[in-house]
Each structure stands twice: as structure tokens, then as C-alpha cells.
Image 1 (cartoon, helix red, strand yellow):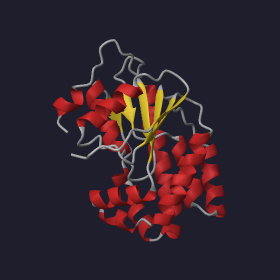
Image 2: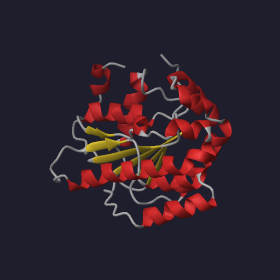
Image 3: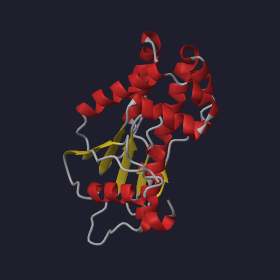
Image 4: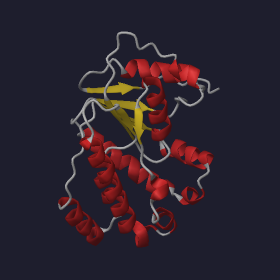
Length: 228
């Protein structure tokens, strides 16, 4: 999809959320959607920098031995990013993020054993975290088979060892988390059959529906389209 296609969304008379967070499991398309929304709305992005985590490759190779340092590195990184965002003046450019801070605890509960999780909570509880509240959260869902195919397609070498069991556990953790989430307006998107990267109609339809949301919980479950 070209920048021209991305920008051909009718925004006339629309109220656009100032801070949007896109969430979901590995491979679901969080970052690609966040980048496209930022282009459409002329927003800045606030993106996870997984490539900066020196423990991540070790975690995927041997989950048990590297889980705690991997998770603590992400916690400190996300905390620093969000604290810096809060320190900006309210008239600074608005943003699209590809994470919620709350996802850190979600991942910790999935990957850490009881002893490591106790240490993680001790660290977390002593941090000063000033996370802004999103004006809209977009939660992307997809079954494990789709996540696996997308992970394989993007070709990051150390991600190829991610197991279906781990992805299923993440999916279940996200489902539980968002079942109770009410801190911001929430759009739950069935992302299995949407191609917002290559199909301009898919992208525009999603954005136009997204812009109708002002409060509460909403579901977007489009019919499958032919991918281009």
C-alpha cells in the first residue's frame, strides 16, 4: 500500500483520538497498523524496540533461562518511553503506540515461573510509572495458525523457534486481559482476514469504523476479502 492509498481516508469532520494504543499477540500486525495510522493522521509513533533487547534471542532459544532478564529489560524500556511521553507538553504531537504498559505484566505471567514472577512484581511495585491513558485501544486478534504464518513470513531468524503452544498461551492471556479491560474505549478486531498492509479497502474500512468509537467496547469482524 502506498502513502497515497493510506492517506485516502475521509477525515473531514472526524474527531481523531489523540493517543491510540494498538495491542495483540506476536505476529498479529500491531506495528504495521500503528505505522499506517500514524501516516494517515500525521501522528508520531511510540513503538516497542524489541531489537534493542539483548536477552530476547536467548529467551526464544531457551525460554526458562532468559525469561526474567528479558522481561525486566522490556519493563524498564516501556517505562522510560511512557514516562518521557508524559513529560512532554500537552500540545506536543499526538501519537500511536504499538503497546500498552499493562501488557508487560501479562507477558510476565505467561513466561515467568513462580519465583521469577515474585521478583518481577517486587521490581514493578518499586518503579514510578506515569503512563498516559489512551483515548482508544485497538486489540488485534488472530488464531495461532495465522500468527505462525505471519511470523514465518516476516522472517526474523530467532522468532522462527516460537512454538504454537506459546502463541496459544499468549492468545489466552490477551483474551482474559481484555475481557475485563475498561480503562479506555476499546475496539476488538478480528485481524485474521484483514490485510491493511496491501489492501487499501481493508485499511480504509477499518479506520472509518474506528473513528466512530467514542466510548465503550466495540467489535470489528469483517468478511474475508481477496488479498491483493
